[in-house]
Amino acid sequence: MSAFDWLMLAALSVLWGGSFFFNKLALAQWPPLPVLLVRVGLAALALLLVVRLAGLSMAVGRRAWLAFFGMGVLNNLIPFSLFLWGQQQIASGLASILNAMTPIFAVMVMHAFGGERATSAKIAGVVAGFAGVAILIGPDALSGLGLNLLAQLACIAATVSYAFSGLYGRRFRELPPLVTAAGQLSASTLMTLPIVLLLNPPWTLPVPTGQTVLALAGLALISTALAYVIFFRIMRSAGPSNVMLVTFLIPVSAIMLGVGLLGEALLPRHFAGMAAIFAGLALIDGRLFRKVRAPA
Image (cartoon, rainbow, N blue to C red; front, side, top):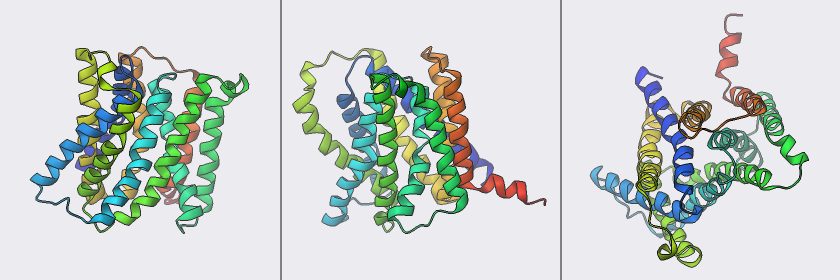
């Protein structure tokens, strides 16, 4: 990776880490589903504009649009709503740590359904990841099925959905990545709109404050639309395996924002669990251990 790629990776981690911060601010006034609708709707409009400026076309055929709806469910509708619901009960930093389980579940999904056999190092990474989750939520599980435990389980379920979206997304290899991103967000908007009209009609919501408006705009335009543009820029120049490094950095930026601006506090076991999850990610990524063995 070039120095510019590393700079873009750091920027992406801040943008995606910031989504947990923006979620928390928006949820202070609005329920999860309207926040979700604004996030995917504004981001879809922004990316459709980028697609047009790039000279690309969304006329990709009926089959591709049906696939966009499937991708929208797995990559947006389910995980975004679960994280939003979960963040009503837990800190944004903890949610971001649990989000780091996504590549670990991806290894399991690809091994079981994608025809990609897991190596011994990746299996060790999966074990380390689950050990981290046990450290994170173990005491809460012992205290009963409370909202705090359910919120953490919801965040974990969201990462499982992300993992399946990676498997499902392989069918879009022939499409420009920006078209895929704009298509799935547009489909997510069309699916979320009737749900919001049924369960949380806009006319029943409080008028958003300036802080809520800025949080919603940041969530949609910065942490979703702009983040996708940077994500695909890194993937094109540095490859998908290097993009995975962002999972190490997202919790760092999310925790700094949560502690510094929201006054959140994480327990020592949360950092211990994050360390175990990071060890699992390092085993799955492999490059750190290859570098350690290289001199020998």
